Image (cartoon, rainbow, N blue to C red; front, side):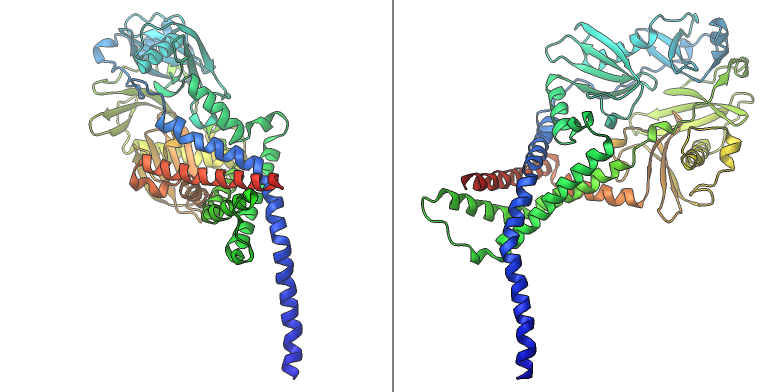
Length: 510
């Protein structure tokens, strides 16, 4: 008797809770779904376009990689010092050798980051040399020597059409008057192709930026508020999906079968049945999207980490040009009180790359120079990050404690291809990988040929990267091939879109 008295109130309370949940969960699902319907349509429809525009119907160009012409030793008649003195250049930041249109040039970067081109045989400056080189590169990429060039614009900031994801700055935008209205972006400072946009791709970039990344909000709110609103709606989608699973998965038998001819009942039936099967992908898309966009609250400032000291012409005036045999790129590195020739030799057959450092005074090679210089840059960038300011003098930064100050290096190696955590999104190659023994397993990827930080990766970046790669971009299906992977991802997104539209139609039929 006592047991019955003890059990009944407990059972009664449990039933009341279950009854309340059953009574309200459909309302919650409907309300959350209605709030999230427009963002869901934005994200799924723009997401569906991505594989079509970036892969299946992508415009092709004859060359998607710029292979710079090799400057031969016989092409260089003058030394760097002679050329600089002849043109009254007293200080500069760096130089390279480039060859185009049948002539070779010293490409000199001045203290204002402008590039000048001096003929390597005569020392005379080529007027508008950087623009001419950009146009030469752009024509090479398109294999087009005839179409009229409408304009050539040097970009020092990212734009709506040239997004931050392209990484390189400054670049030249070369616009052609052809049937595709082609814009080609090239980085003359390292002779690199950045990207291209034809009329179709320009439209896609606008659609994706506006409706997938919600670029339209940049006009009315700041970045933090835009991200907060996006995460809020993504959370609504997650909760709506969970509520839908509870209703249509666990309470399926509570619903009456749709009567023949009852259009609303049929719509609800299909919304339920398809919704259950797509609830997992809806959850993974929304969860990984929210996780990804939250990282944007911490701005990606990798481009500010660059070591670009000024070099006095008098310090290189007496230096003889190094042997250029087999050299594909050359520059100068000012490291403490020393200045080195930095030469790159690349085997195009094996993709093997060797970067050497030779002291301009005594001609001695620096043993393991590329790794050592990368370590120097990583410590410098870590100290700069700790100060949250621009790079300053070596002495000050050497005294600044950072997370890698006392950490050992677990691995130091040259990276010449995109793979794993160092994906194509980083753009720069070759780089030196430095994996430090820190609690967050901090890894720096340094592009020594430009003295830049390519990226820094820690455990929290790896977790988010895996989430986005496997839950949002479906990289788990890479083994099936890119077409199959994109097909599966497109089908999943299309099902989410279909379920959303069916749910909206059910509501409208009321």
